[in-house]
Amino acid sequence: MTRIQLVCTDLDGVLLTSAGGLSHATGKALADARAAGLQVMVATGRPTRDALDWAREAGRQRLLACAKRAVMWVSRPPRVRLEQNGRKGQLEQVFAWAGRSVRGGVLGLDTEHELVLQPGFADLVPGCWPHTVSADLIGRATRGNRAVKVLLAHPELSAPQLVDAFAGQAVTGLRATFSTAHFLEISPEHANKGEALRWAAEHRRIPLAATAAVGDMPNDLPMLRKAGLPAAVANAHPEVKAAARILLPSNDDDGVASLIHAILR
Image (cartoon, rainbow, N blue to C red; front, side):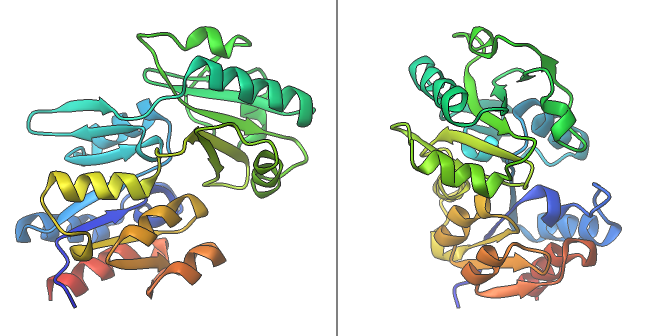
């Protein structure tokens, strides 16, 4: 097998424990990877500002893709690259579809600088991130604060059900997925973790065959399909397990750490 040079991992439910932190064993594995020259990239669907704040706090900002790939953070020198953003016309089409077809749904907008949610959205999402409340989401998306993705929560419909509903009314250039059962995520079709992995490998001059990816939810599937070694944690969604070549211990049992140590042996 080709020697793995880059590991791309999801954050919540994969790299972090269920309590939301890095375990001692995983932190040590990341340090061991860094010392050995093994690149580790975090690819998360978290809102942009939250992901960047986490990366700075944890010292993991070297390679980071947030909002699935819409925003890339690269250090040396530190900079943020907005790779994909939604256009105003697309946002208007999505909002019109939601108002017409998903009665009772509540929308959110992840932008370059803030997460903006309509009133009531946070009540439907346990542990919702810091955000601004506004009924005028499109008005918050400006040239200096570009839209990254649309969120949609519903009091009765799950994220998989909302994905099915959106598939029937697809807006050109956008795709829907989910990283939690609580809400739908709609973003530019090329803003996905598979493209994040491809970009990072190219940026570091590493063949895709020499990459590994670890995920747990359907929004991780594009990076598992791109990676030379696709892996899933034991707590992963069935679709993700089916796409993986190896099954790791759960996030609470340091699955990513076990993969890193296996690569370094």
